Length: 300
Image (cartoon, rainbow, N blue to C red; front, side, top):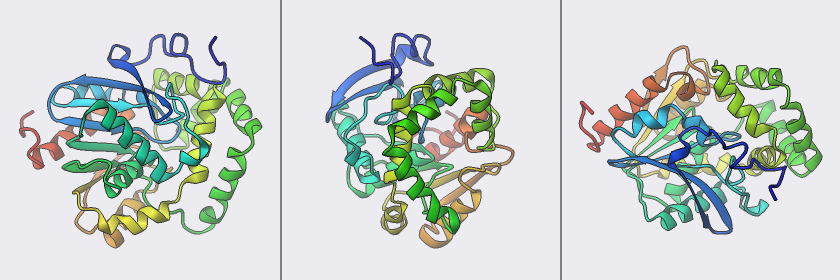
């Protein structure tokens, strides 16, 4: 019998984007939903907090023309089950992703992480769970919150994450499409009706909401700030200049204080969900970076 707190694959996933590329595998106490498509150098896609593989619905097929795409739902998100709460930390999530890759017997040549997914990718490299030729941070959440948000955000998230009623309240509120549309608009992005409906389909489930809150509650980006200077892999920063979730200034701060050798690419007019707004523009940048790393040909 399906658990109503979690998205059910046969119901919520009945027409899931790129469903034919989906498979399930149990690793490290987690039942993972993973999509694999395309052929060529291996590109790992790691979505951000509160999202899932649907976030790559239009970008993945474009990149699959030149890459083998591996795209999991992160632990607790979408159709992947949750680990213990103690594993919902940055090192814990990085280790879980590493265990998944080992079980799949794949080693990505390139990693593209969106928002928190970028932090997981970098932490996984720092902890030797993967060894790609390059890491692409798309509107990456890589540095601690500064000022008042830094004092308020994590304590509030910890409180919310430990109270199951909060996740249920968020899920109940998500039944109203206007709530989802306002949430998306708050990121600086504009999505079509299909994009909004997919987020609504997930956020209506308390288990998905709990995973997002738990990640935020256990996130220590101070580790990332300390680790970035030790990163031995080329880092590429893609930022939507309309991003109101992670300010574009943060990517510039990364270049100034942590990674002066990182390359920065700016996307005018796009917000935090830039890859969902303009997948063609993001795909072109990813292919350009891959060619620069000599993973693909320039005219791919």
